[in-house]
Length: 180
Image (cartoon, rainbow, N blue to C red; front, top):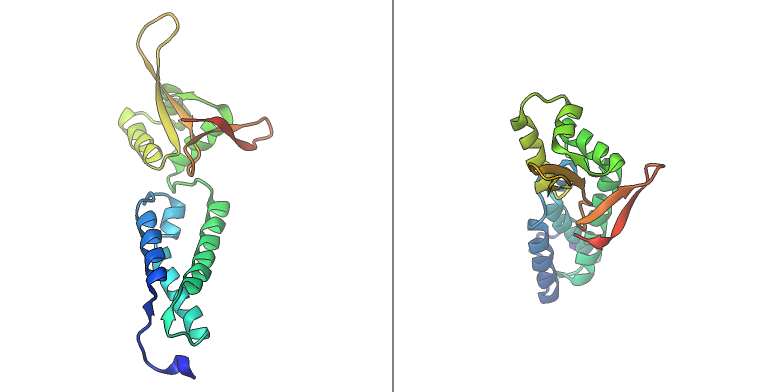
């Protein structure tokens, strides 16, 4: 019955500190891509979850235990979205390039343009910008062994850690031991 009374729930000092830290980290995440779109309201859902847990306990304030319980739920939802949608960007050309790069290893820019069937380099520039901004690829400049003009090469990266991603013959992705 206590939960039915109209009242204001505030954070305890420890819970407020944890919230501030969580929100600062959340704001630094990429805002593009399928998973980002699906989890954009995560902070609001976390606060609602905190309130539900606090009201269920008839608590007078939102405590650390309520924050941690709600955080576990929204993090589970985010992991589920990542599992289902992976590194999908929501852009069919970017997704196709990413999957090709993961299977084949490094891919020269010209090969990527041909693979995607793009006539204009500017179309590939948009795709490249998207994948780089999401941390899904890295653009490398390579100089041919006999000299000549440098070539741009795409290398697939892990979205979470910035480690190089490699695919074995079965298509399983593994992280390389070296940091980029």
